[in-house]
Amino acid sequence: MANIGIDILEVERFNQINTDEEKMKKIFTDSEIKYFNKFSEKLSHIAGHFCAKEAVAKALKKGFGEYLSPVDVEVLHNKDGAPYVNINNPKLQKVLCNRKIDISISHTKLVATAICIVE
Image 1 (cartoon, rainbow, N blue to C red):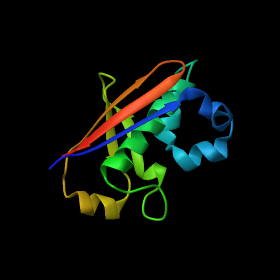
Image 2: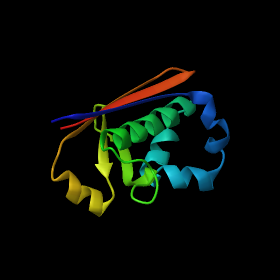
Image 3: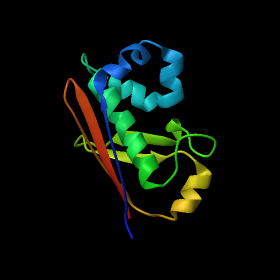
Image 4: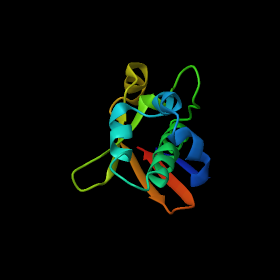
């Protein structure tokens, strides 16, 4: 059975976080931050990745807290630019037992959204 998670938010929520390196490192991995820095207009990409992390957490029926951290859910991109998820939490990897995680991210300058399906 597949689980679905979705998230949407306003991009402007990341105006202050974007300039706070400590907060960014609590939410995003070094690889994700490196990806964001490729863009002059990076806020929508940051918001999209955050939405993807939230969508994954919702699909897994786990909220961020003691068991799951935002950096445990890493959003990377293949050579074609398509996003995919890397789980950095060994306990969660065991629970998933090779289940497939698909994500899709979309954003404008104002809004970002993501959906996740875990099969």
